[in-house]
Amino acid sequence: MPTTEQWHTADTAITALRAAFAPLLQPLTESERRELLRVGVFSEAFTADYAALIATESDLVPATLRPADTARDWQTRAELEERRQALLTLVQQIADTMAALQNDCYASALIAYRFLTQGGLPPGQDAAVEPLREHWARRQERYNQTRAANLALEAAKQVSGGSSGGSTGGGNAAAPTPNAATAVTPMSATNGASATAPRNGNGTTDLAA
Image 1 (cartoon, rainbow, N blue to C red):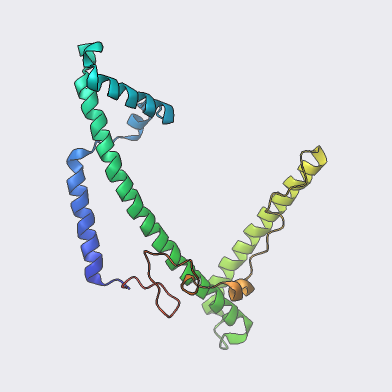
Image 2 (image 1 turned 60 degrees about the vertical axis):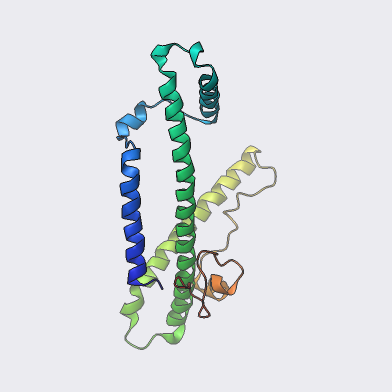
């Protein structure tokens, strides 16, 4: 588990990163974002070609369009994109670590819930697991509603002749059940452990490794 000092170091780095980027960025309001031209793959390639043109043939463009400013802005965008990709990699690693932690915690919760609801709960302690029962009941209800909707959709496709023998996939899915906890293996016991989150021998994520 990370130490308080490690969290402090990370928070300090985030604060320093925000301060370093502040003079380089131009935050927009929601209305300002809506006023921007629509940009996609084509428009990006088109602009890149224009930037290449004015880099060598700026005299072809009217001076009122300030081609030098456009070239500078495009270069700034390229520099920002390089940093954005680096940050996206970091954000993905954070998301991977959170997913691994969630996996371990959920697997433990499923196993514990099965144990507690199948005779392992001490007498008089029913109220202690009531929140778990309520959550599981809501999940079961959502599953039943989704399955019914998928079955109805599949039936409608078959009636209309739109089905080619395939399945939506949702109608035949296994119902969620705490009994499935026996099939849930913490990621530490598989080859799916994240490289960013080393595992220890207890089936949990060891962030201090």
